[in-house]
Image (cartoon, rainbow, N blue to C red; front, side, top):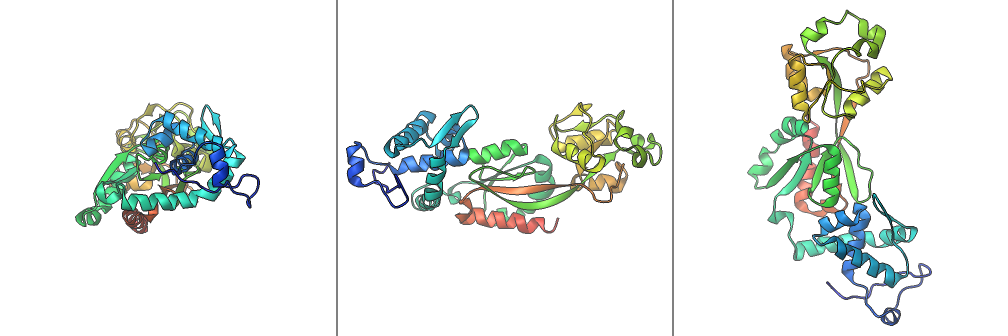
Length: 325
């Protein structure tokens, strides 16, 4: 940890804490406190900031308390959900975030562990990773890029990204949190599908007449109690909520597809996942709305991380690959 005196406005943007003032308070501001402050600001949590920084939560708390003491201002409101920046915390973050990010990148390049020393960690939904992402990685791995792939839900992956346990995440949820940047990766059509056996039990044209009511007695298969794509399809096409209790819940969209092929029930699937089954007749589309609902996948990274050449290369590769999907 470095002992340095950092100028920061006290009463106005034109007034700074002088070395003499710091000495009268009996301590020097430490660079590490500001690094910890930015980590808490971006993560929204003392615990997650500790995980990102590789230090204990009490150490994070001590850093923030020391910074607040030397500035004479509270920087965060502690809540059961985490830590929300105060007005002064917002100001301090806006004035120091870019400089601290630049410094952290320099330290990482010169002194720390970089992506050249370890695998790049990518997380994404299992179905998309299996069908779209993994088949596109051959050239990167042949060129010597090491990758560590994790499969999870979008909400969990965004939490992992904030905590620093993954470097990049593909998410069907658009991130809206401090310290996370996102770029739209691809839009995928959503289709309501069933086996031919189940489809044959529906009277012709009943969906166009009765809409969601025609499906109320059919078993529903989803990969979660509040699965976003099923809810989105029902709201977009039927202007209604999907059945409150699915008949079958499984954690992997590929397993959802297998269950529907076996006539367990109906499901909403992204079109890329079931195109082969549709072409073979193992599945049929129950309804073709004039404007198909879509789900958008986002490529999410921590702010400033694309300054790393390996991250930037991988990020550009995924965006370029997605254009051909």
